[in-house]
Image 1 (cartoon, one colour):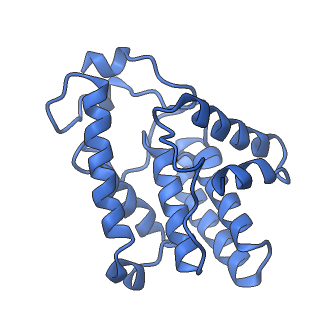
Image 2: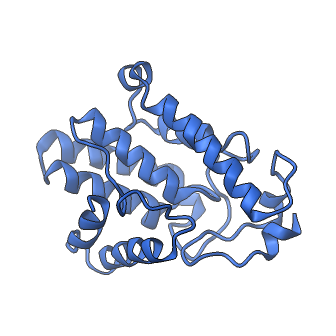
Length: 203
């Protein structure tokens, strides 16, 4: 899997370690093929997540759902899906803190929504930012996972899905990805600077 290990990652992507790269399920030889497999897997996960049966029978603000959704999104590509990372990254919390931080975030989001602490869209954007930027729980796929679960929670609360840069592919479209990362970093720097990420998410 040297093509994965040697591939120059886009800004904001989690590096893929050898141990993780060795657990690719399909036989692939290029990053393009990997992206295609992941995209197909994510489409299938989306069908599951937004089906009427799943929407009525599951709670996306449950820790088990967080891991299940990640597994559904990448289980045909990576063997380690749905498992929290054990390695340090230059983003997110210490891996030992993930099992405590996820339930805390879910409880916070539920409180925000139940008590109308912020408008619903702002609740979702704050949840998204904390999940992808402050915790970053998985070895890979964090942005895509955080965007999908945010959309699921929004729909469960009567809101439309977010467009995330007018439906741009934030894995491959550099300009849209840069805008998304800049908005996340603005909120990193100032917890009240929600405007940029909210506008991007609804653009």
